Image 1 (cartoon, helix red, strand yellow):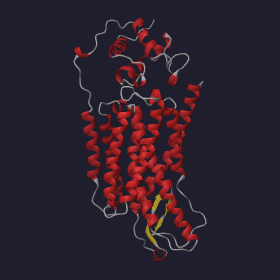
Image 2 (cartoon, rainbow, N blue to C red):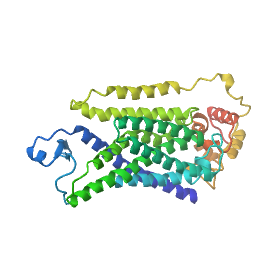
Image 3 (tube, rainbow, N blue to C red):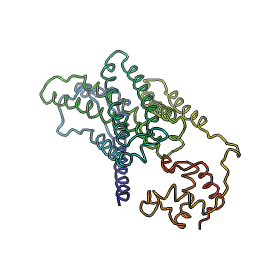
Image 4 (cartoon, rainbow, N blue to C red):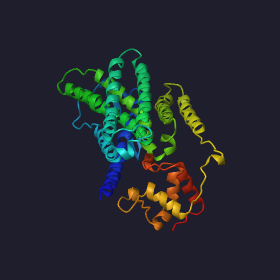
Length: 400
């Protein structure tokens, strides 16, 4: 019953997480586009009100005319929309999903004894520590260097170094799949913390000053914009890290930390292309194709570098017997504890001949092709046993 309820929790939380993440990322992408596409206002009345940029757009059969004030409008409207629940809901649902999927069963999903054989409590504490420590260090970098001359470049370089160190450390401490997702959660935590600790508080101070009839300090807008820009460059790396659990060839690679860093770097470069493309269309900067080229080149280099080597036939373990009895013994010893009558993980049951026949292709793909199962090889399946399963499947997957 516990597994059944956890599956439902996983489904509903993942669904919610995707919905609110779409809302957050969508609004983030839109406002980056809006900021990059604004042009000086033509209407003298708008200029007198302090409007610094405007955009005319058509969508869904209607015309829209958003404007941006240099610091703040001369008068607050009656209804002011705040963009923050998209961020908070994304983080809360994501953390709940991380709790259900990884922290609830750390010995299965978080710990790989071949990487680091430690207690569940230590692994959980370290995973949570990643989220907190990265935010503290990242925030300190922004506070210290963010307001200095050439501060943005220095902050970007140090944050890149910090992400690389964190990615390496995660892959040396946790199972590959968990390490990739943890790095994504780490960046997503910083993104949401930027909203919670800097962007929204700064906006509240601006609103409070306007209501009190006091001058508005422009520093709040500058700080909020800085953190918002950081968030947009984190977006594509985070999305990859969150999707990576479907691709064992990436997180299971011998140098998985290099794979993680390279793909995140490619994502950031591609995001830079789209950000600068808006300015290029208005003649503000050169065409940003080099960023897209760099991102594409990094991905292409990874594809070539990660290409599996063709092992000689002699390297494969010899298979003495790949009959139903031998396969049944392997399945019973390595798989049934999670895929039997008592615990049918992912609704896959392998303890009967009918079920094993039905899921033969899945068994072959997960244990031989992707080698994703047993998860983190918790049951200690051997290369010889994988070879038996491979030969069994090639011979037609007969069962008793």
